[in-house]
Length: 272
Image 1 (spheres, rainbow, N blue to C red):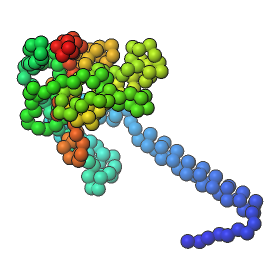
Image 2: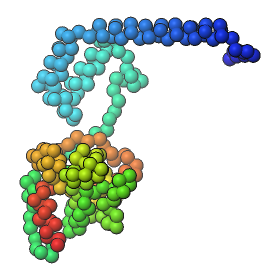
Image 3: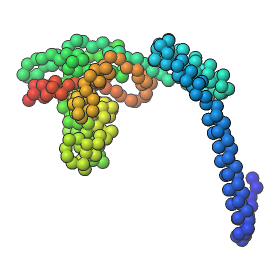
Image 4: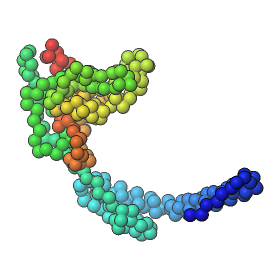
């Protein structure tokens, strides 16, 4: 490596160096603009439209994973990339494996709830929607205790912990959707009516898992969730998920899902 040593500051030399740097930067910017222009010019409305027509055709079955449509899609993309002169980005392959599973829950038609006040039945899809991210062939909720845990939030920055003094390990935890600020009229409580991540159902499941719960059921409310229960019902018909079986040390609640607000009230009344 060559080194240059200056005993004194040379204004002329510094100016020349700065000028060279500016010219080099301008040259690089010009090259980038030329490359961008060439790239944009390679786009053609007719060819792009044709690709969209092909990929959105019925024969591609919505490009859904685990279907013949998926195979047709990836083969079409591979052929298109090759014809455009694009080189593979993963060694000699255009593809990168993404482990996925499709899990379709086959739940009993009813769920029986027992309490000191008696028994009653809940109807699948009408009263509750459940699923799992686990690939176990059989998951059972049998005589498992149900624990209400408020919003199911642990947020130290807001000095909030719904699980404080509450042991839900191996139990079914019942939590409300959204977060404490919603509907409170207090914009300083969390973020008021603006939902934080703590209010999302994905967080509820994550926190319940961290607490060791066997199941987590979110109480649905149309306004608080911002969508009707019919949306949730669609989620219980089968989902594509990343296969997390190889995630070492990551625990997911074996059962996740939602129940209606009316059923939640019925559960809480039965426990009093």
